[in-house]
Image (cartoon, rainbow, N blue to C red; front, top):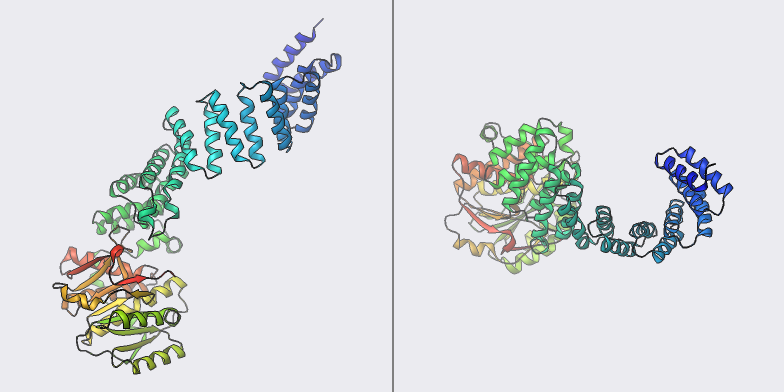
Length: 558
């Protein structure tokens, strides 16, 4: 005759062998024949919990606890069943009861943490996991859960410690490296930094460690790590905090990525930025064209980075064509100049905008012009001016004693999306500058109307030796569409300046002619044209002002 102990051992063996129905049958027979055997009630409950029948599991394990209230395992497993039954508060209570019975048992700490997370108490969950790790410091599962718990609470500085420990214990595991990269990226504050604040806000050491971790994880096949690697690199370039050596390492990974994923536009951008930084814009353009053939025009139009790089031109044939076949877009505009500037050699500040921008910023600009730049004349060019704006400007010219001139332009922009329409307003002033220089006026200083003058650029011109063009340059290597900033560009009345300007105007016009204009075109054209002339000969003599220490303008927040 089989004893209860033998029957229980047989049931446990079947249970461990996943023969659940047979094990359950024996457990039931035991509780019917010997209901005082708490283990049978407990193990039958555990079996129901494993089968997804959590409510019944909780009832059965409760029967075991009635027979033996001081067994920590019963309490802990009851907590797990209650948690599965969506009773997290009761579950936490049972896990705590298990720990009160056996404070040195690790498992209830982890289960308590799970119940506390369900209750939204991440802080107490982290404390429970830390107590588990004091008992078993290198337990992989608890290190991972602690890191994830802290990261979910945005406690990234604390989450770094368990992720670093996991990497030390299991070097090269992509999932741990990826998590470490996420934490360090958050600590770097890169994603929260604006252009004006990035230099002092971004923690470059944290950024470097994040990119290194993403790179190692991506090398191990982690797809999201690769996306974060190239995405973080592009953002770092755009905000001016990417160091050359770091960019070179990421570009090497991006080249490998493109061999298998030729349509990864972010990886492609990383390589192109790296080549631009090395002074090889011609090679960046060829590299872009090699991979852009995998993209349809519609695909490019939907991808910001691809759009930017599609406007970068460096090949001599493109510039030769500009001279042979001048674009027509600007020529088709109905431009009129009812009050032209005097051709007396006085430097001219030129602002170009639409009526809405003039309505918002015109009065402030006029005030600082009169206060800060008295030696400059002012020319205002408005695209598609409303009647009241045109009338206002005509009244202002009558009172300005020849120091204020105006021009207006009528052009149908209804088919253009908003970013391209804004680009046209910024670009049209290049054609106006071209016209003014050809009429013998100038030098011409193009400035943004949504800025305030700090000093008189004309007064500084006497100290500019043999200059053709003065540029405001962002020396942080942010890319060919952000290097020469169109908020300030000055053109002297020299043949070299006019040849350069003619190509810039044609460059912009060609993109509008072909429907490939986008935001940044007014900055891509001056930079890329200068790069072409440097390589082919005939580059204008530049005066360069650093954007971060620019002396003439303060740009307004919009």
